[in-house]
Length: 249
Image (cartoon, rainbow, N blue to C red; front, side, top):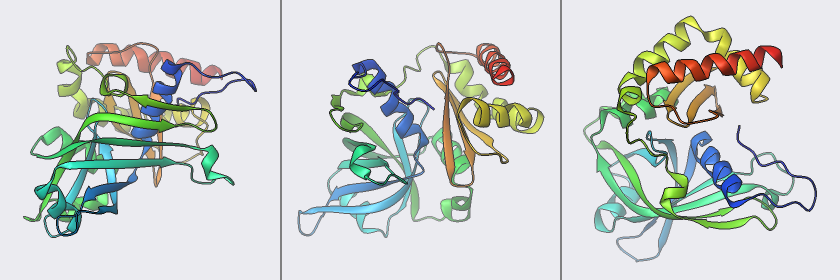
């Protein structure tokens, strides 16, 4: 996964911190959603499960009966906190990012597919009439990557440019099916040899111009490419290169 590793006293560049922030968002399975309470006007924080669209914007599935949904209908302004500090003795030394913008309901089939690939249990209620998918239209972010690593990011620094990548995005379902059915061994190598993941039945649950998302139970990893890809042929070339690196590791 994209993590910033520096010698003591050496600070990462802004571009490195942005890459680390993007990876943190892509790996998230849950987050805190803060909305403005329609009754009191005070901030209201709740727990949600999350995924990302192809660009990296957070997407989530919520019920119209939930208080946070009613708040968003009243005022679309929201913030999502992604916490990457789990397992640390001092969580304040870990990475987290607060994303803010306006949330909107979406009927995008790609959003539904990408979310359910990460949260299969949600398929049971995703079709209920009171449930709908939402996307946070990012307006900015505040990232803390540990001591002294505090940066504000604009959307362009966190979102992946998908212009020109239509062939890749349209081919994503077939790419994932092919990799999971025919190249499970390669996915295992990516997870364990390149990303430090544990042995297990890792699956590829998403791909975009910058990389691929891998999932095993409640653990998610981010596999990034050396350069952006825009088509199935280009992602195949990138994945072949990465599996060769994994085999030589």
